[in-house]
Structures are given as structure tokens and as C-alpha cells.
Image 1: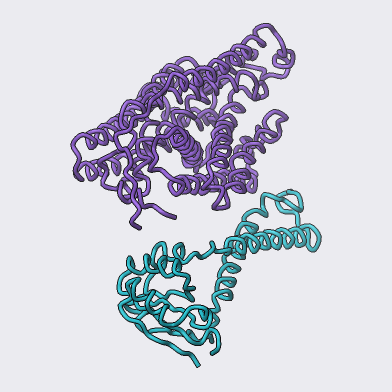
Image 2: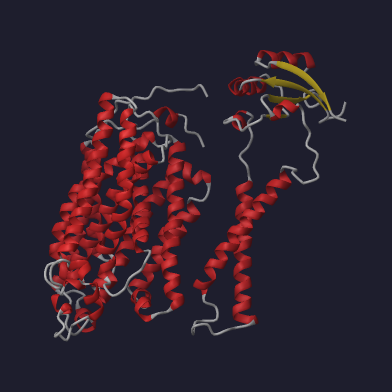
Length: 176
Length: 433
């Protein structure tokens, strides 16, 4: 069997049951591949033990890039490429540069953050989403468990853990 | 999440003798510094340049009392602002139907206890400081036959003197001062008493009543905060005006008030009070401080950039006085460093807002930083090149700050620390970000 292809799914009806189930399943040693829910469930990523997103670091670095770009551009244009006398001010009036610098910082931070998010979440326009169960877009929470990744544990044991954690049904899912 | 701790909602803050002693020591150090600051010019130390380079002409030679009065006015305006911001932030929680902050409501409203005290000091000091702080109080400005006649101020005269004759008694100004302070004190007592009655009787009805009064107060405060900023601060530079000055002063008050509330909340938590306030609530206060520090910077810079760019003499004089001065120019950059650069970089990360040590440092610097902001609004326009941050300034600041801390903490110790029947408490327990 190949990894990332063969799954056993636990279907949950209620978010509170799901939240405690996630903790129980993890405590039993079964590793969860992912949980799919129709709406954001508060505290789910905490119970799944996800690390905090590193997206803010990307945002900060892109913001820094925007600041550098804006200042370089303005200094080059105003001071070296085409100096103009505007209101008798210095050729490089730093206060005048601040609005453009601010705007480019925000723009690049925002665009960079969105781009990093799309790339890291594999949300390219031609990406084919893998649907474990269509009902996870409607009213069911779906917990996917990779059988190969959990090969140390028998399938029957995984089913038993899911059942005792409150799953309303247990299904198989195999991707080509 | 099922975890639920039973919090002691009947807890009262015990304002211990040790805490009082600490505050009195700070106030005592302030009084000592203030005394040294007065003694030095009285004995003639460092007074050499003041007479020669001071303003000449109609003004008498510089006298140390002018600097004392300028300090009195800076601290009056600054701390009355922190007081009203406590009431304002309390009202905002109700108007916004916020649930996360329910555990902090008493900390916010307790800052209003400074209002009655501060109002009395402010009104009394206005009659002491008037000629030394407010140029427009001189009657000869309005006399067309006088060589000192000032056409621009004469045109603005009715704003101070209506309906009396210009140059007589500034009745309109004083009525406004009484009305604004009176309204603020009225709304403070109204909101505070309703909140305390809720403790005794319970029920959601109080929440709706407080929300109604909070909404009325916010409308009143929107108008009065702006006009009070023109009256108490902007009228010092009588010729000059800035259309966003009201918001600029408000934002300065707001950041300082938020920092003071956060410090009090942290102080209480460290002494075993307000246990329901956890790092999530502190995190949100930190976000407010971070966001409104940037808002203050935005307003400060908007005011500066337009004046700098347009370069119209009667506008740019305001910044010429501050930037072309060896005394004020470093302080102006200190102002931006303390109120923008420091909170922006230190409070940017999530961890900094959740660990109290960062907040304690930043909040303390911000409270001093916004005092510096008010210092820069008042001193250059009143005592010019005779000013600066010296013994007198630091001393007066410490005296006022410890007085405010004493009054606020005494008020806080009078009633329950948590509005125990507030319908939002349950939401506040589960606040998680």
C-alpha cells in the first residue's frame, strides 16, 4: 500500500464530540492525517496539536522588502535620476517619502502574505481538491486517518478507537 | 471547552498600607524634585541666559513661576484625559456589546475617580495660570488703539469671550470648561452607579440601561473631547490652528489611558486579584495599545506632513518653534521614538503581548511618552526657549502620577473588582485568541 492513498474516515455529527474525539484519538497513539469540517471549529487546531502559523514572519519580511523598495525607488528618482526643485525643499525630503513607503510596505506585506498562503496551502487555480467525503462541505465533520502512516496499529484497533470516541460512522476511502 | 474554574467574584481590592507607602514615596520623590526645580531658579542657578535671550518687548522678563504654571497645565490636561479615557473605554465595551472585556470593566471605570479631583485642580489652576499660558487672556490684544492690537486673535475673540466684551472675562471659555468637566463627571457617576447597582440586584436590564447611557455619553464625548482639546491645548498657540487637533489629543489620551489600564490589570493579577483575566485578555489590551499607537502616529504625522509640505509661514511656525530649537528638537524625536518606534517594534509579535514583562516596560514608557507629547504641545508656545525637561517637569509629573494612582486605586478598592452580575462574564471566561 502506498502512503497518502488509503484512509479510514471517522464521521462526526457534532463539533463538541469532534473536539474531544480528536484529543482521545491522539492520546490512543493514532496519528490523524487531517480533519475536515464545514465551518471553522474553535479550538480544533489546538486539539490537533498544530504549531502556530509562521505566516506573520512572511508578512514581516515582505513588508520589509516593500519598505526597502519604496525608499530605494524614491531616493533614486528624486535625488539621482531626475532631481526637481519642489517648493525649495531638499531633493530627498524624507517626510514626503513616508506615505509612499507606508503604502508599498502594506501592499507588499499583504500580497506576499496571500501568495505565501496560497502556495503553502497548495491552492493553485488548477489544483484538484481531494474530497474525503462530500458531506464535509455540508453538515458532517470528517476525520481522516492514513492507514500506511499508522501501519504499526491494526486497522481494527483504529476503527475501535474512532467508534469509542463518538464517530457516527466509519468509512474507507482510497485515492487512485 | 469544558474546563471551568470557579472564580471568586466577591473579591475586593485591598489597598494595603505597603502599596500606599510605595505611592507616597514616589510622590515624595516627585515633590522633592519639584522643590529642587523651584529652588534652583529662585537662587539664581542657571538663570543667566533666560533674561537675555527671552522674549523681549511687551513680555516681562521670564520668571520661574511661568515654567511652574506650564507644568501645572501639562499635567492637568494629561491626567484628566487619562481619567476620562477610563470612562470612555468602559462605555465603548457596552456600545460595542463586547464580551471579552467584562472582567476588566471595573479597572476601566475606576480611572473616572480622578475626574472630580482633577476637575477642581484644573479649574483652580486656570485662574492661576491664565496670563502665563493663554496669550489670548491679555485684554490689550483686543484694543484697536493699542500697539499690541492683534487682528487675528481679535477675530477669534468671541470664541473665548462671548457674550461679554472681548478682552474682559472669558465667560464662554469658562462655561465650556465647567460644562465639559461637569458632563464627564455626571456620566462617570451615572455609569459607575448603574454598574454597582447591577452587583446588588442582577438581571440583564442594567446591561441595557448602561448601554443606553454609554451611547449617549459617546456622542457627548465625541464633541467635547475635540472642543476641549482646542480650548485647553490648541488655544495656547492662538494664531495657529490644526483641523485634526482634537483627534490628535484624543489619541494621545487614549493610548496613555489604555497603557494605564493595562498596568493596573497586570498589577492586580500579580497580587492575586482578577484571576479571571488571563493572557488572552491582556493580549487584547496589548493589541489596542499597538493599534492606537499607530493611530496616534498617523495623526501626528498627518498634521506634520501637510504643514511641512505646504510650508505656509503661519502654519509652519508651530514646527519651527519645535524643530529649530536645541531644547525641543531632541524631545520631539524622543516623542516619536517612545510613542511609535518602541511600541511598534516591541509589541508587534504575539508573544510580546501575552507576556506581561514586555507590556509592563512598554506601557510605562508610553505613559511617560505621551506626557512628553503634551509637554511639546504646551511648553514651546508658552515659555519658549526657557523650557525643557528638568527637575520641575519630572517632579510635577511624579506628583500628579502618584496622586492619580492613589485616587484611582482608592476608588477601585471601594467596590467589587468584578462586575459579578454582568451578563457578558461567561463569554469573558472563555475568551481565547
